[in-house]
Picture (cartoon, rainbow, N blue to C red):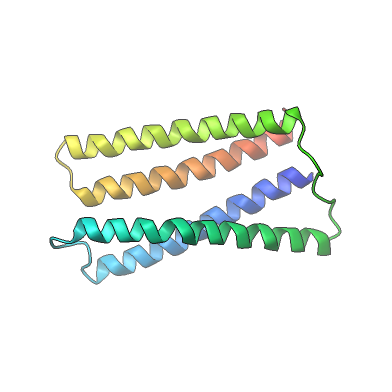
Length: 148
């Protein structure tokens, strides 16, 4: 398995782990009745604004742990540069990821347009972000596995 494939799998695991932790925290808040009341928009705003830096920090920690594990396991070093193939693979997987998020955004707006609650709109947006991240990493892995 190449360095890029291992990195994609590591990123995929990190993304799933961050989402599961986030899901459990939000579920706990839901069970405590934080989704009801006039401050529901403030709740979602705070929740998402907290999720952004936590996700970034989690990704950074995940990549550091991957690099440490890769060095200890005797894996190959990361490339010094990225060539056109690497950039093309990243571009293709990012494009697919953005399409999925855009579809999720449209679905979230459809939820509101059809009379759904604000909670379902935000849940749809968060799920779209998670799915776009996971699918993007999966396609990144697939493209590196195929070689293009």
